[in-house]
Image 1 (spheres, one colour):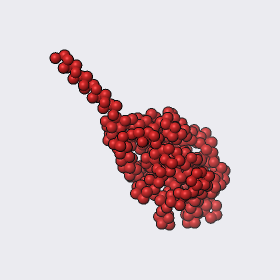
Image 2: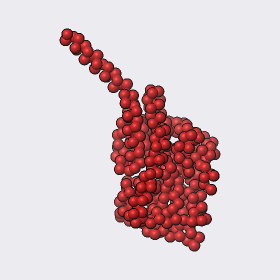
Image 3: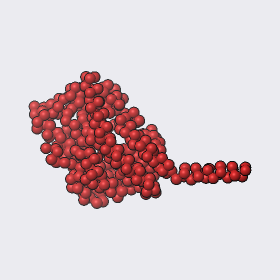
Image 4: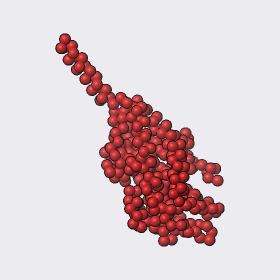
Length: 337
C-alpha cells in the first residue's frame, strides 16, 4: 500500500515538474516608472498574456528604469540581457531611424497593422537589430508644447521661443531646433520634475496624457495647440528568444499584442479627455495657433522628422530603400489636408 501511495506521489510530482518546465518565461522591463499611464498600459498587456498563457508562457516583469536604465534597455534586449522591452523607438533611433515613421505618423496601430506598416517595421527591426517588433502600443496620442509662462507670438502668429528654457529629447529635437530654432536642454523624463521645480527648464514637449501622472502640471500653465507627432511606444523582443518559444507561446503573445494595440488606442483617448478636463478645471490655459502659422507648424513637425529619418537612413546599410514605403504606410496625406 505504501509503495502505491509513494508511487502516486512521485508520478504526480513528475507530472507537475513537467508542466512547470513546459511553461516558458519571458523576462521584461519597461522604460518609464510604474506610475505613468503608458507603463500601466504595458502592465495590462502583461496581465492579459499571463492570463491567456497560463501553463504555456508567462512574462516576468523585472522592473523599469531602476532595473535597467531607460536608454540602456534597447541594447540590453538586443544583447539578450533581458528578453522583452517596452520603450519608445526614439530611444534607439540612431540604430533604427525608420522608427521616425511612427513619430511623424497621423495614423494609429490599427490602420498600420492592417496596411502592412507594422509588418515592415518588424522586418526592419529583425534585419538591423536582431529584434522582433511585437507591437505598436498606445498609438493615436500626439504631443503638445507645454509652458510655464504665456506663449509669445510674432506679428504673423508664429510661436516665438527666444529665451525659452525648453526641455528637449530625441523625439522632437529635430522639430524644436530646426524649425523653432530653440535652444533645448536634453533631460530624461525622471529629471524633468526637479528641473521645472528649480527653474532649469520652463517648457517641454509631452504627450496629451501623463502630465498629471508626472505632476508636471504643478509648474506648467499653458498648453499650445495644435498637437503634433505620435507616440512611438512599442514592445521589442530578442529575436533568438522569440524563435526559441513554442509556436503556441508565440501565437498567444502575438495575438494578445495585436488586440492590445486596438484596446490601447481607445483606452488612451478616454484618458486624454479625462486629463484635459482635469487640467482645464485646475486652470490650465489653452493657446491655439491659427491659419498659416498653424499649417506651417504642423508641416514643419512632420517634414523635419522625415528629413531626419532620411538623412540617418542614408548613412546605414540599405540606405533609404524603405523611405517612400514607410511614408506611404504611416502617413495619410489626405487626412492632413
